[in-house]
Image (cartoon, rainbow, N blue to C red):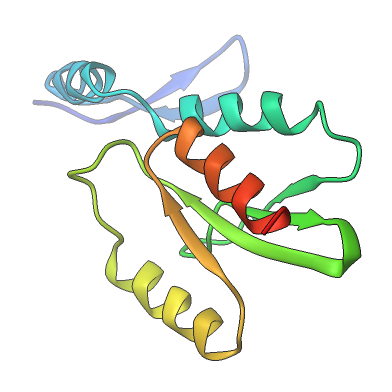
Amino acid sequence: MGTLLRYDNSRGLLLRRRPWFYFLLGVRRLLRPLETKHEKGYMRWLDTYALWRAIKIYRHGWPDRLVIGPYATFFFIEFKRDASEDLRKKQKHIRDFLISLGFKVYVCRSAAEAKKITTRYFYA
C-alpha cells in the first residue's frame, strides 16, 4: 500500500494520504441527514425572538445548545439525526449529571420538536 505520508510543496505541510476506502465512509454519511440541519432550522426560528438566546457548547459529550430565556430560565438541548440514534455513554452520563443538579435536558430529533419544547417551556 505504500506510505500514508506525503509532502505538499505548495503549502509546506506533511499530509497524510487517506486509504482508498475512505470515500465509502463519506458516501454513507451523506445518505443520512446531519443533526446540524435540525439545529440550523431551530436557530433560524429562535433568532426571530429577541428575548431568547441559544449558546453553542463546544465540549465533547455535552448537549449541543444552552437555551436562555426570559426571567432567568434556561435548559439544554441535544440534537440527534433521527429516532434510531441514541445518546452515547458519555452523553448519557453528562445528561444524568445535569439532571441531578436540577437542570432540564431535552433530546430533539427535529427542529419542530425543539420549537415545541421551547414554546412549552417558556410559556407554560
